[in-house]
Image (cartoon, rainbow, N blue to C red; front, top):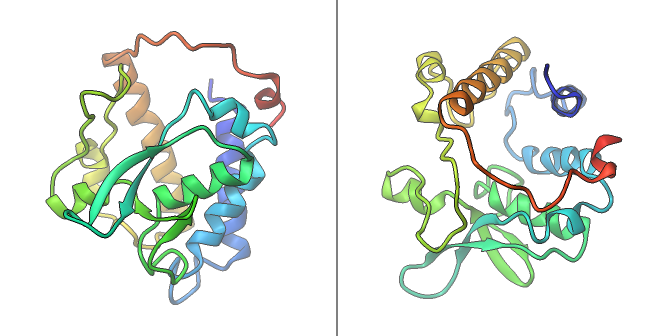
Length: 198
């Protein structure tokens, strides 16, 4: 059965999109997607999310630094507050100018953009570095043949119906992928009670 939290996440995203007039807005998500994602994460994550995630989650970002090369992928962890965790997530998905009209997102005094930026610039899919935690599973949208047949643009605003269809397709893709590539992971603890209540 589908987890209750998964359905709530979808319903919340749909409500926020409708509230912001995404489906009829001429500019679509341009300039408003960032605040929408922030609201979505703030609504869904429990207040102790930083404590839950600090030793269990690393957020991939691209550091916009002065140097060669100018972009360097790194991971953020050990979050002090829920808001710092959300800001790290926002940096991890930050598409310059498109998300909120800003070039980058500042976290802990440094400027970051989308964590996959270096892979986009090199025109190659994501890979896991040898020193990063294992096991890991690569989820790359271009490997989903059914999704690719839809020819939806990466940042294109689709209809509400297509949004629901994409959600169902993503669930099916991951269900099939996990059936064929099961992850052998021992979590350090059981899911905290605070996650059961959301």
